[in-house]
Image 1 (tube, rainbow, N blue to C red):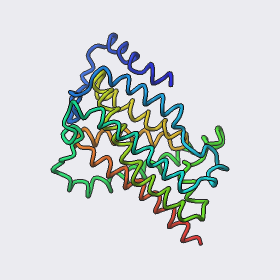
Image 2 (image 1 turned 120 degrees about the horizontal axis):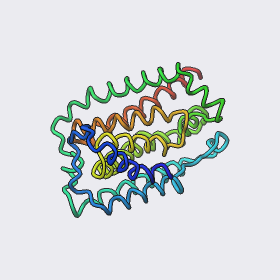
Image 3 (image 1 turned 90 degrees about the horizontal axis):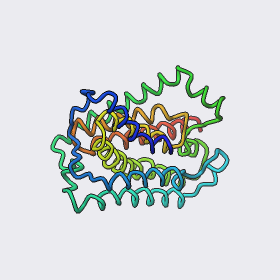
Length: 260
């Protein structure tokens, strides 16, 4: 938490030492609607994630105690939290324009999303061969993400369905609206594009509270920012996020069925 609190002041210090970076190349994501008040909201979101929103369950034993109602309530909570973003921006900007919801090149998603998923899986393979996951498991006892553990262990198909809905529908929408739709432009407004991409990507990785998946989550977060800047729309990052989660869940479930 201290790291994120010091990130922007640290950036300002760096800019005093090296005032010209040449890296702030603009982009498609507008920051014109962002105000100083949004920094306070950003701090509030960080506090919320690191104190209240630590997720459940928090151990391999508790994962099997989860219920469909728990995952559905978690999905609802994520969507409610994400709904605060448009409410905060509604009075000062056209939301459809700000989030790029009228993206005319939507057909590009047909190839963007599969390519993104393939790249992420290849990066996962590279990460595996670096020994990172084994080192984390031995050193810290970290395991796969909670939802992944649940899908590999439970026989309750209602629970699997609720977890899948949370991962495939609720999480991609809520997280893209919050991290790319709001946090990224806020940080970009008070810094530079490169710093904002690193900040939001790092935060995206941290709030999943899983050290084993942390490097990939950070890279995914940065990748989603690149897509947002490139297209000017949240739709591609939502689509890539959704397809990645759906593909991961499908592989797990197909693996279980094949081994049944």
